[in-house]
Image 1 (cartoon, rainbow, N blue to C red):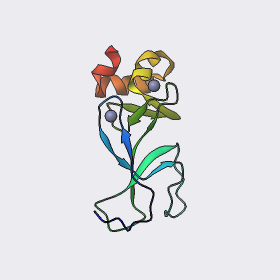
Image 2: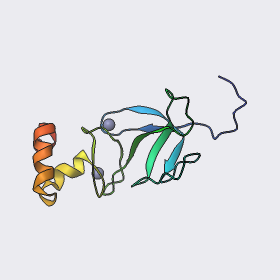
Image 3: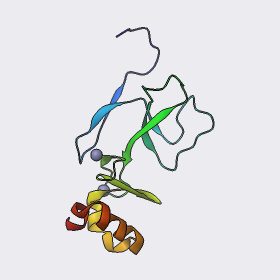
Image 4: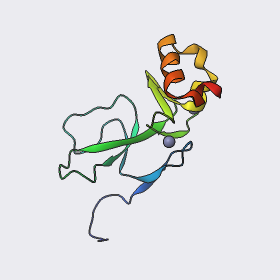
Length: 115
Ligand SMILES: [Zn+2]
Ligand SMILES: [Zn+2]
């Protein structure tokens, strides 16, 4: 670990549902040093550690638009449907999502339907 970096100290993103935790470099809709990328939502992003390309980044997660819980983008933890929803809120408001989404969830994650 070198101390010569001029970047902000790493902050930690933790998914409140699955416990996934890792450092993130940026939170927002437009990651710095990327070519005109604007994300659909405010996300926790980190530079892709496996890519030498500095413009490559990974979206780790986001905050639920309803309960503001930090959740990762894993399909077991959150769903993006015009906004980010954590699976707990999806479970609570499942009847307000379109049938297509409900069917997808029932197929993919029986857990969510049972919440
Ligand atoms: Zn998660
Ligand atoms: Zn939520």
